[in-house]
Image (tube, rainbow, N blue to C red):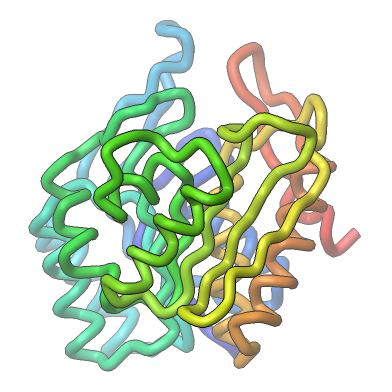
Amino acid sequence: MYKAMTIAGSDTSGGAGMEADLKTFQELGVYGMTALTCIVAQNPNADWAHEIYPIETAVIEKQLVTILQGIGCDAMKTGMLGSADLVELIAATIDKYELKNVVIDPVMVCKGIDSIMVPEAAAAIKELLVKRALVMTPNLLEAAYLADMPAAISSVEEMKQAAAVIHDKGCQNVILKAGDRLPGTDAVELVYDGNTFTEKRHPKIPNSYNHGAGCTFSAAVTACLAKGMAVTDALETAENFIYAALRGSFRMNQWSGALKHCAWRE
């Protein structure tokens, strides 16, 4: 059985974080394990405000030992990392266990917020995890930060500039997801492997809900890598998976909606 690990927060609403990761692993035929970094609760009495409750780094380390020393994994991904200490632990863990299929989803911002949530953790990700990543999947705001760009990315050409810088910092394969941050009818995705820029476009899906889309996409890449797929094949499968999940997305309540993770199978 193929095995994958996610180091991520818990989204109580079930749409993002480790809940999205484990659903995606399962749908793609991979056994999923999680080292939980925090619990996020949404407050229905405060317009669905996100309340974050971190888990102690020592407890996270115990979870990593359970998975890596006790079981092992074929690929891993990260999600929400709330402190520089935690990022340092993950970097040391990657080295200690010589983990190869490392997918870094640098969760530095929440949807609807255009600022870095935890600056010290973001700085540590830039310094320690970029160079250990086989694949990174930042959104445009995260990519601009990782590439030391002074302003938000607003064009495909700037996406290429950012991807090149991130690759130069050590990441082997950079995938930039524009989402709704670029105008036009197409959602743009740019892949850079150090040699070739591959630009992919998919029609934006009107009235879809994309809560957890970043987590789900990076989890799909991780699952495919765990199964031994080449990076290019893993990306193609992940693209098909997320596109189906977005097309099947549904409204949960007055504040949010969710992806349909089983849509790809159906």
